[in-house]
Length: 381
Image (tube, rainbow, N blue to C red):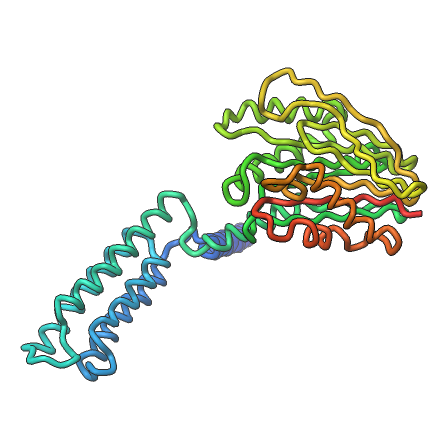
């Protein structure tokens, strides 16, 4: 009986040890992939290239020049942490000394370790160390800096995705940042509330443009996405205004328009915080009508009031929400920009607005150096 207990205890200990080893290995692999793990593998590989380059220089100095030591130094600046980078620099300096001893005394020719060679290698090392220290200071993972920016862009894109609507409704969103960048100060958050019978959409334009506004847009899109649907429709903009005020940003204001649409009846309510009016196409008359609530900019003062505007989308009607980059330009009145937008949109009345959002931005504001966003909601006939 005691032997059986001992056997079971040994088996249990073995399983626990194997489980701990798997967990440790998995954690090490995840940390390495994310850039949080040790960089000893990259350091070891780069250290091995130093004697290989030195040997190649001694054997064939014409084909393997002494200045080739800058190659592991440049790679180290992109891959290694500052402490590891100093070790690589010490190895490269030792390699230069070995090359100078092996190739000297110098009587001229291409295979010489000149002061210019030393300065070239030292300058590359200096700039590589600055890059590594900056990366370490801001906390960007040493292999995942570009991937992290890509992830941030994808998170903004996912947060701006519109929920699926019933078959008699169509919605689409087009977003084009300023200067062809990947990040924008315009964003959309949307959700179906009230058991899926109501569509709530918030289009926001953060002050600034492009990369300057992207970080604030990312923070606000997450906060607004959490508020949307958690509060009654009339409580969203006051809560968003209070959140923006608490950030105490120097350039912290934003405009926003909040649409609350009943998907059963087509009735809607618009609440605006200093945003441009929405445009509704009435299928019966073929005319566009401006629809907007009243309210101040978000983040200006506490206790702001936001009055709503009500309307209804009949079958065949279209509602268009957009930011100022689409209709505003220097030397041109906003009313002219809105007229141009509606004129281009009239071309889609007969054939339908599927896929029209991106083409409207291209037609109206293709070369505008500002963030542009356009949201279309169509009640299919």
